[in-house]
Amino acid sequence: MTGRPYAVPVPKGYRIGPWEVREPVASGAFATVYEGVRAASAGAGRTSDAGGLPRRTALKFLPTGTRTPRQLHHLRDLAEREVQLLRRLRSPRLVRMYDTLTVDDPDHPELDGATVLVLERAEGSLDAVLARTPRPEAGPALLAQICEGLHQLHHAGWVHGDLKPANVLLMADGSARLADFNMAAELEGTHAYSPAFSTPDYTPPELLWPEVDERGTRIRPSADVWAFGVLAHLVLTGAFPLPGGTSEARCDAATRYARGREELRLSPGLSEAWQDVLRDCLAPTHAERPTDTAALLRRVEGAAGTSRSARLPRLRPRRWRRPARAAVVAAAVVGVTSLAYTSPWEPDPTTTAPPTCERPVVYEDADGRGYMAGHSGTWDFTVQRGDGGSQVRELQCLLRHLHGIEEVGEVDGDFGPLTQGAVVVFQKRAGLDADGVVGPATWRALREPASG
Image 1 (spheres, one colour):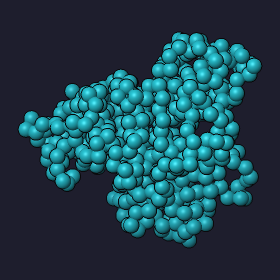
Image 2 (spheres, rainbow, N blue to C red):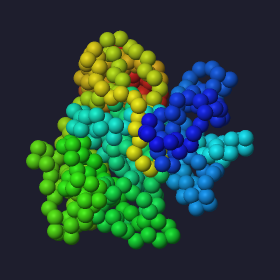
Image 3 (cartoon, one colour):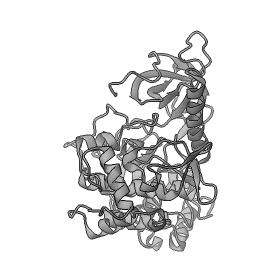
Image 4 (cartoon, helix red, strand yellow):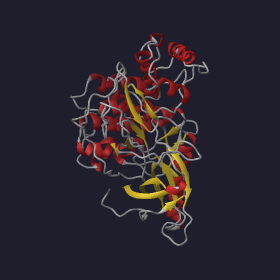
C-alpha cells in the first residue's frame, strides 16, 4: 500500500452486494481498491447466477457521494469514463469489469453514494516491477502485450490517455493488462476529449500545455503511441528517453525536442529494431508517429522476439511439475496516480520450465484443468479470422503441437485462412459446430489432450 491515507476507507468485513471487503490492495488520490470475496450467504461455488464471477475480485471504491460539488462532478466523470469503456470493450489485454454497484448506506456517510467497480484482481503493477528491477528480463515480452492492448483499444475507437507503468497491471501468470481508464475517451473522428490531466513524463510535447475547453483536452491516438515509446524505453533501459533529473526538466527537454532544439538520444544499448520502433513512436509531432497499431504491434513483437514464443515472468509462479490450483486474480485500477501493490514479483527458483509453443503443459486455474502453450492464459474471448495477437498464437500452438494439425501454418499470431481451415478440421473432430470461430466451447476442447 502507499503511505498516504486511503482515499476511501472501508472497514474489513463491509458488505456491498454479494461481496465482502477484505484487505486493501492499493490506494490512489481518487480511489481505493480492496480485495473482495463472495460472501458465504451469496451462494456456494465459484460462480454466481450471473455466471462466470470469480470468488475473489478487486473492489474499487470511488467517493462519488461525498466531497464538494466540483469534486463530485470530476469524480463522477472519471468513474463514468471507466465504466463506459469497460462495459463496451472486452479484450484479452484490457482489465475486466464484472459489475458496478452503488453504496446505499446513510449510516456511513463517508461511503454513502460511493461507486464500486467489481474488477479482476491483479498481482502487481509494472510500476512496482520497475521499482524492484529497473530492466526486467521479461520486459520485451511485456511490451509486446502492452502494445497488443493498445491496439485492441485503438481498434475499438478509444484512446487511453494515461498510459504509464502504474496503469499496466500484471496477472498471476505474468501477463499484462491495460488498466485505469479514467482518462480514456472515445474517438470522434480524429480526436477524443479527455479531462485536463495527464502524467507529464508520458505526455507528448503537443499536449504539455494544451488548450482546454469545456469538453476537456483534445487528444489523438498518437498520444498513446508517444506514451508507449517512453514506457518502452524505460522498461528496456531503466531510463527515460529525454534528459532531466526531474519530471519538469524532462518536460522542458520534450518541448525543446519538439521545437528542434534538442535531439532524441536513445540508449545505445538498444537493438536496431527497438531503436527504429522507439524513434517512430517518439517522433516530435503527432503526424510523424505510427497510426496503424496493428503494424506497430508486429514490429514490437519482432523486436521483442515474441512472434514464436513469449515466455512471461510469473508473479507467483506455478509449479509445473504437477497441476496446481492458481488463485483467480487479475486487474484492479485505482485513481489517476501511481499505486504500490504489496504482492512480490520475484522468480521462484524451484519452478520448473513453463510451457512453450512446442511443449504444452497441463495446469489448473479458475477455468479448470487443461493444457497451456505459453502465450495466453485467457480462454473465454472469441477469436476469428482477421484477429491477431497472443490468443491466436495460443490457438495455433495448441492446434499444431497438441492436436497435430499442421495445416494451421506458421505460428505467427495472425488468424488467416490456414488457421481458419485448421480450426474447422479440429471442430469437426471434436463434434462441434464447424464455423471456424473459436469461442468458449472450442477453447475448452482445445485444452483437452489429443484423442487417438
